[in-house]
Amino acid sequence: SPCSAVRPALPGYLVLCLAVQAHSLASAQFSVTGPDHPISAVVGGEAVLSCHLSPRMSAANMEVRWFRSQFSAAVHLYRDGQDQNKEQMPEYRGRTELLKDNITDGRVSLRIRDVQPSDDGQYKCFFESSVSYEDALLELQVAAFGSAPDVFVEGHQDGGVRVVCQSSGWYPQPEALWRDLQGQHLPSDSEKISPEASDLFQIEIAIVLREESNQKVSCHVWNPRLDQERESTISIAGLFFPRVNPWMVSLWVILAVLAVLITLASYCSWRQHRAKGKVRK
Image: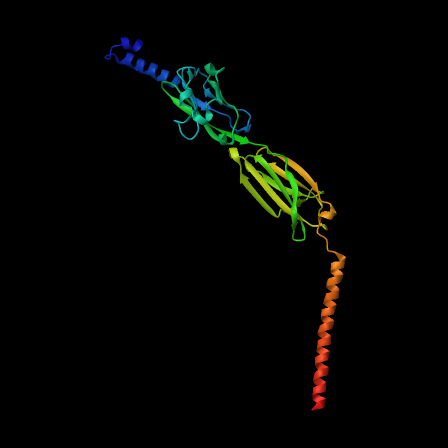
């Protein structure tokens, strides 16, 4: 170093050395920048998270670490010019790749393959040189587009037909509703969301249809994160609706009339019997 040749007794040269060192330290400072919006990915697909240094400088000899909540639990680690797979979290092993084509310009990207619902959330992109370190926060939003709704008649209920709609394989939790032929929303009789394997969700909604109301309805299941929906329609034939047998109605009317007549006859007979008793006295 030029400063090593300068004697400490010379204050002018000492000031110069301090200025050179301060300039070197300042030039080593950097910031890390990531995207200013969430990165979207579909379950089973790929996600690419990118970040870069400002000002532009080479990161080939730096440590580049991707992690989530804990610094020591690495999603991916690059150090000493190579990937350090042994320090990687088990759930990410074999699924990540650091894209280093532009690492000499301070730009890197992390590719995550076979995206899982558990990958959803925040990540930190961390750079460390010999004199400085910085990081940037990124967000990955994972979504899964579930199955087409399965709509079927479950049975009779409350004088109508209970129709059920089921759909599975959604992430995050989906929303579901019924619509009539005119597209008007119909209130559900019940709704249930259940967790499935691999952190996915199943949804089930039900409605009771009556013959005088809607016989053709559609079930819509919607992923709010993807802003996409699946739809299935069902038509209920009139014969499925519970009907009242006219002969049964007539029978009940006759029985009711007979009951009234018997009551009146009994009362009249009692009155006559009472009247005869008074005459005899």
